[in-house]
Image (cartoon, rainbow, N blue to C red; front, side, top):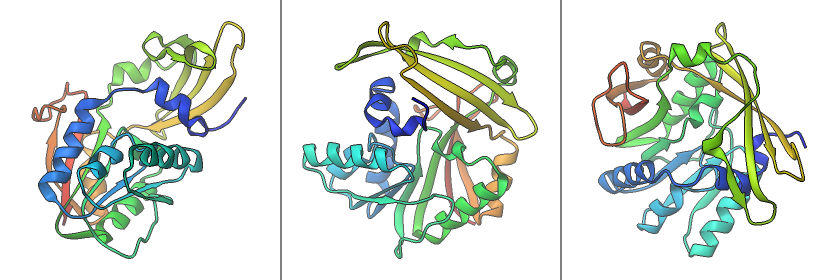
Length: 250
């Protein structure tokens, strides 16, 4: 099968379990700022459902109907109320403001063009209540790792998982980096011994370099208040794995 990777929501959750430091970080941020919470690119609700369980009025927006369906199923199973909205983070209007808006797990990097990023930031700006914060995490690009994206298909041992229906699933990835677009263009292959390549899906991710990020935010009407380098709150440095950004209206 060839489709968007996010069409396989249950497999996605099996491939990317855990992430508790990120969940704890965003959960603490929602508690600190209170009020209404909006997650863009909410996926299957891995972070939004725990936040909603703390009693916050929550909205989760995502472009993938499959991911939203899985999020709704998980929330219903836990008895948690979340308003799930299908929408495009580049341009959305929910008719209300929020006290805490976040984009987690590199989801912002699905926007490849600078104008799309700026459009997203402008949409976020319009949805921020007085005193609100906008928080997101993206990886800190490594020139060495980008240069190693040579198009060769390789097994990602760390992503292998057990599917209750299929058994052991291996994950191979082939990636090429396009420096002019700052986009890594990948193809992901999911296989079992009896069903090789039962999923073949594209996944294209942009890189945002540290110096360009504040400029993109400013064009979107936002100001970078703080940039952290990991989930523990270490200040951002050149060797940090993450750019964990806290923003406010400019």
